Image 1 (cartoon, rainbow, N blue to C red):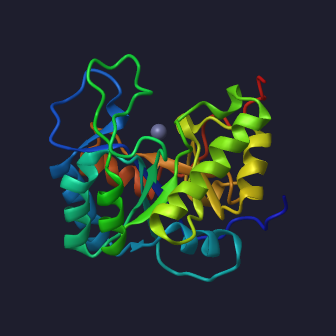
Image 2 (cartoon, rainbow, N blue to C red; image 1 turned 60 degrees about the vertical axis):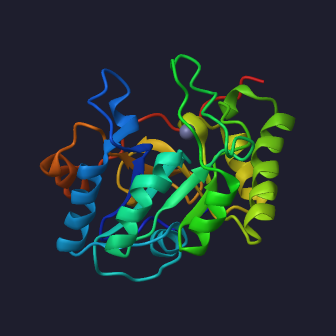
Length: 254
Ligand SMILES: [Zn+2]
């Protein structure tokens, strides 16, 4: 896989999970964002003159020589929680922004059953909600069929998680689904190559850093926005915390 070195100026892919009305969590803080903070973060992006773009445009800017002059941001939201429909999407629409939501294809309208330790498993968006939001301009990507750790699966099951989720989301939406996100940020080189082979155009990881530090479009780095990030913390992550940190591809275990 040979791609030219990434371009500048800074292009950050932000990572969110649940966005809504939540008390300060004792743990998993990076999996929650209060809607009031989310709204102020969106207003900050507008005030500071960021281009809020989608992943297709990010790929063009980072890897296909598309010139750009303004700092840029992609908003990604993992798992497809129903709170996105209720809180985050209306806030995004108010600012004229979109986002990419990664869906677990076999769990639409169900609960986040992979959160085995959690006393209550949050609800996930229904197929109907996904279709409605798509009509309103929201982007959707695949987060596999069942939210597994891909490096723990054998090649056949990796193939099924990556290819079958694409197919069923494309059937649901009636269009290409070009973006993938590795559940838990867990991937192997074999899984990455299957994502490429399946026809996806990008895949996001949980490796921290500005997107400019991504090795290729199938190992995109992101910045997690945490519950504790006030506006200063948010701005710090946007403007300064660009360096790459965190584990890349894992060895396949099966
Ligand atoms: Zn996830």
